[in-house]
Every structure is written in structure tokens, then in C-alpha cells.
Length: 322
Image (cartoon, rainbow, N blue to C red; front, side):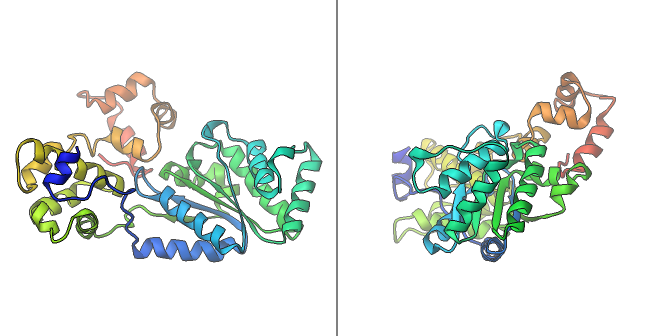
């Protein structure tokens, strides 16, 4: 791999993933800073690789450096098991001065001690929860109650969720109206409106001067790659694949044909779209009210599938298109 990068006069090893801030990112960043100071619930949503976690981390870092609010974060990696008790534990850990003596009280005492802790800090508190699309709906509804209880005690708590579009779809459903109608949504899908500019910026970031993007990749290849991909993660991945493949076949510049060879043929398949939007096979079967075999036959494009039109219509309601 390193030889391939050197072949195209690119810096090696790469730094952390290239961050390209758009006006949409800046808008969300500024809006959240203001809203968090007031308290409430917020959600940043986007497909896999759209940059929501990166954006959320930047917001956290900024707030911690600024010091005007107490930043808390749920570190649990198994989001399907995250419940209200787990989130209370995160808050108690981050609000207490010593982790060694942490013991989260039970029952009525838990809420009262949390109020006492926040009042001692005398600052708004914000709790960040990543991968929130996997959290149970009832846990999300309970978060609304926590915010309300603290607000009544004149304590400001904000909860910032980050997740795939499945989270937004769930919160927008009638069954989640109790919480969904009270949450502000921020989508970063299509935040990068000019992907050609993003690719050129990526190449400029890593090219060793005086090498220019046009010395590495043809304009046709750049435009083709931009048209074929959706997210920063995809672009980063396929640029690396193109660099490696072009080196292996002895190309001096990456052409459209090279891009065509490395692009996955199922990039826009229904199955790939579902995964990018946060849906696992079992969840899709429940949504479609279908058996596992019916779903597998459908995504395999078996001819004359009896429920094909029905499935496509339902999937279109969550922005999954054929």
C-alpha cells in the first residue's frame, strides 16, 4: 500500500480521515450550541459514513473546551441493551468528582440526587448518545421524562442522539409521537453537495507539492467517482482502492476505467441501502411483515415475486428506492 501512495506522490501514512466542513455542518454546529444551552432533545441523523459521529465529536470537543456546559457521554457499545439505568449511570459518572465512589441510587432517590448534582455544578448538562438507532423506543420516551423532571427543578439537560436514518424514521412514526414531536432533527445526508470539490480537496490534502489533483486523477474519473458515491467514508475508501489498483496495473494517472474496475457492483442495491440506513435483516422483515425467505427472495430479485410491488412501496416510505 505505501508503495502505491509514493507512486502517486502522496503523503504516507495518511492522517486521520479528511474532514471537509460544509455550510450545512457549520449550520448544525452553531444551531446545536445555542439549543443545548436551553435544554431539550436533538438528533443528528445520516447514513453510514456521512460523518455524523465526526460532527458530534467535534461539537463535544468544542463544548468541553468552552466549559460553559457539563458534557456527558454514554460509552456503552451494546446500544440494544442501553436503557434508562445505563444512561443515569453515565450522567452520575460524568457529574461526580470521583469515579471510585460512584453508586447510582435506586428508585425516587436517583432523580433527586441527579438534580442535586446538577445544581451543585450550576451549569447546563448535555448527554451525547451515539448509535442511537439501536436504542429501544421506550428508552427514548423515558429520556423525555427525564428532561421534563429536571426542567421542573430548574435544571437544564440536553440529550443529543446520533444515528442512522432509521432513528429519524422511528421518531417520526405515530407510535413515537410522544418523544418524536419534541425532538429537533438535524440530517447531514447530502451535506456534501459538491463531491467533486470534496475529492479535489482530499487529493490536495495528501498530495506532496508541487503535485496537483490533476496529476493524480483525470477530471473524468473525479466526476465519475463523485457521481457514483454518496458519503465521505465511501469516497475515502474508493480513493484508496483506486490508488492501489492503478499502481498494481502500472497506471501513471487514475482514469475513469480504473474507477469502474474498483467500484462495487451492488453499491446501490436495496440491501446495501438498507444497511447504510441502519436496518438489519430481522428489522426489515418485521417492517415488511415478511418471512426471512420472502425478504431474501425479494433482494435476490427472484422473478415474479408475489409481494414485490408491496415491498417496494413500503421501502419507499423510508426512502429506500429500487
